[in-house]
Image (cartoon, rainbow, N blue to C red; front, side):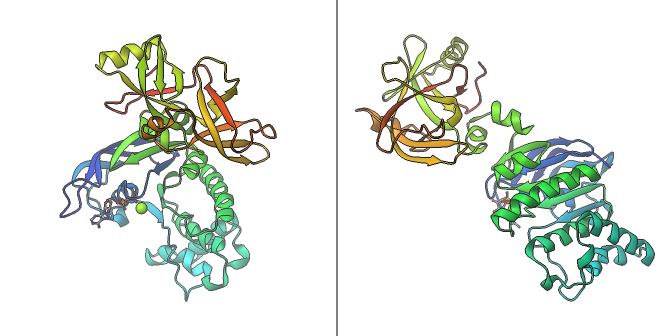
Length: 374
Ligand SMILES: Nc1ncnc2c1ncn2[C@@H]1O[C@H](COP(=O)(O)OP(=O)(O)O)[C@@H](O)[C@H]1O
Ligand SMILES: [Mg+2]
């Protein structure tokens, strides 16, 4: 077992002006399941490949435990990688696929058999050991790819979108299997996905990347509750947080079109210190409650769609009122999403007023996008 440390690790691809990964500082604990997440092209695979030794590190360094592996060949790093495309050898049985790396490294035959059987038991693959990959389902092939990594008993597992070839239902069950398997084995794991739900459900901690830059690394709940900036706020959570830029007006309030939200004093002070009279405000769908339209402070919304899911109901609407158009320009998305009591949802076309629950607004600097603490 081992820790993994990125120390200002940077990768600039030849011919590129900007780094694909820019001064990444990240300390992963021994036995931790760390997920790298972010939109396509943000540098997730590059970060992982730098750790694997498949991509050069142009500046900074990477350590596994106390070993500086920055310029070490991949085979000496004691890692095992699971890729999106499992690349199983089609002419070999499951057992031979799983044991292949051990065979290459000269492990005695009896030892290979022992480790393959042990991994096959863990992965529920014992009865398939003599089959060829083409006689397996997608989920079983994915497990063989996992098995191939497990038999090597590495210090670190690296996984790059290992579930993206599975259908939606299988992806959900397999992610639970991988997470519980990792916890049982206790092997430090770095897992890449572009899917924030996958990241949130699997990771001990989640590291959010954008344009090669680390945005925030924290536990799933801390990311959700206190996103460090507007990007993380909008990226983590489904349905997404409502985010818009408001004008600060008299009386500790912020206004946008017809929408009117209260702003705590500490935030007002910070914004005026910045010389601004604008603030970006975010509120999650579950932080909104319908109120009677006479209430002071609220967000008038016309209901477009209602999603009744049984346990939850979501209202998708657009800003209502004569000044609604100016509001839309300042919203991150043109819909307002609210979670309401299931079976009590308003009707399509109805006009409702939503209010943000006390203390549940998130505030961000318009200038930097950084969170303004309350
Ligand atoms: N071999 C390469 N040569 C040049 N640019 C690359 C290469 N591989 C990736 N990139 C670029 O580096 C950035 C990060 O890529 P990548 O790490 O694959 O992102 P992700 O895995 O998050 O989708 C992207 O802009 C991508 O186009
Ligand atoms: Mg990738």
